[in-house]
Image 1: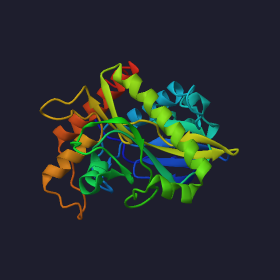
Image 2 (image 1 turned 180 degrees about the vertical axis):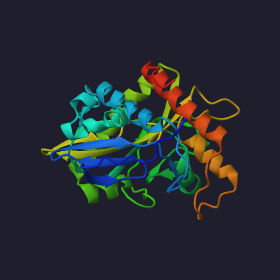
Image 3 (image 1 turned 90 degrees about the horizontal axis):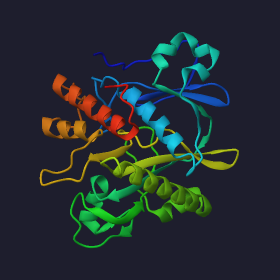
Image 4 (image 1 turned 90 degrees about the vertical axis):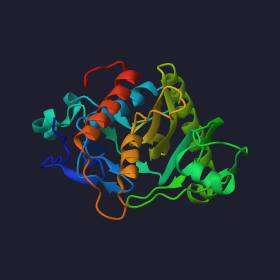
Length: 294
């Protein structure tokens, strides 16, 4: 099975290109198209994961619809029949890979919500006992569940590393009222999604959101609760540790491969590609009940 790592839609104006997605400008709307590329440690890997882009886009669409009662968002449609006429020659490429959305003014903050302590949050906690400047109880181990989800913002960087910041610093950047509203929306979405996933045997560990303004109103934009933007575990970790259904599986392989993270990223072997694809699809199927990618 071939990974689709390059997507070009001739005749459409490119709004932006990211590590995984290309966004096309349609005036007051955007078309977000997800490839099968995968990035890790700020590098795009030379090998893609077949169907990954379809899972990312379809899962985002699923969550946007599911979260309609909780938060307003930018998605208009993920049905190629609703896309503009100029996209018609590319319908088969775009099917399950693209979302038509309203154009928003992005708020340049990564809005991270954590239900467990792991990743960069645990590294900060080890050093200082805090996460995003908030002091946490002593004695937490990596992977422990927090008493309550916490909001830990970071700067939004198009290239290179995002930088974790405190909520106080976010207030200076974005303003107090905006910060309060984004925090409230982020925590509400996380808790709703965490409850839904938990009912299906999936643990939502943490995630990151982006918000923007449309007509002065703050709405959820970009992607939502995908295995690229979130950590998901299959069930509660046992003595062997968590079973990730997200990009962490590939990160773990790269960590063990001997790659120095300063030279070009290595290609993934076939068995790792196949297993990563299986985990992405398992997450999608378990959360949505839709087996189209199996």
